[in-house]
Image 1 (cartoon, protein in one colour):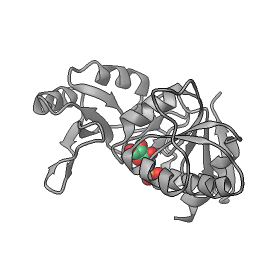
Image 2 (image 1 turned 135 degrees about the vertical axis):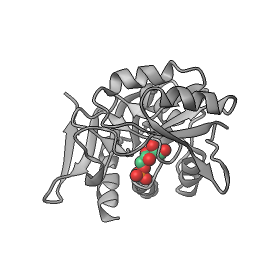
Image 3 (image 1 turned 90 degrees about the vertical axis):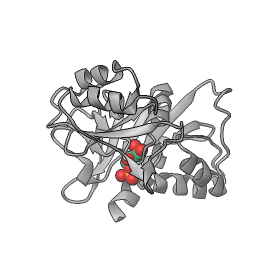
Image 4 (image 1 turned 90 degrees about the horizontal axis):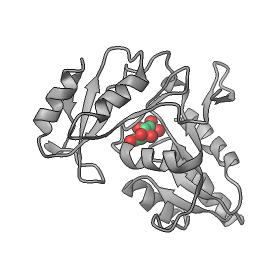
Length: 223
Ligand SMILES: O=C[C@H](O)[C@H](O)[C@H](O)COP(=O)(O)O
């Protein structure tokens, strides 16, 4: 999709020589990673910190050297996609199942930049089911606790088996009605035993790169 390519490529402007860069997961940041690979051939030097096995493979294919996660002293910028972005720049993420590593890297980064085609921009989060990473043990009980918060839930499946994240966990997709208070919901979900992390990234994005109605690139900064 051309919109994803435009916003994905624009994000490389936040990357400067010598930086350690958090590399998100998905079909939008894909274009950022490809572009960074091209720029490296022209002399840019960076190290990447991938948020998934899929992104790790892509970064290697693109010739981006990977930082050793145990030795990183700082991540200068992390760039990632989103499934939804609200007017406060709160995000819903995890459609691709990578939310846990993505959240760890985004939190550690000095700057977190989001690339989102215009279809991702919403007034309130919640049209997209919220991905929640849970440990496999007792998944039905964890699922029930999430349901009690008012969601319709589904354990995510892939090829007839529960989908497993890169961390060996399961994902529950939880359809809440409009999420009017994402901060409270994020906290409530993470208090449920068995929940590892959820896909609400509240007040984390420093900027969101998207397109306006005229298809021009706009950068929304969090106030
Ligand atoms: O787990 C996946 C990630 O949170 C993605 O960043 C998110 O799903 C957006 O992906 P895409 O750019 O493919 O729409």
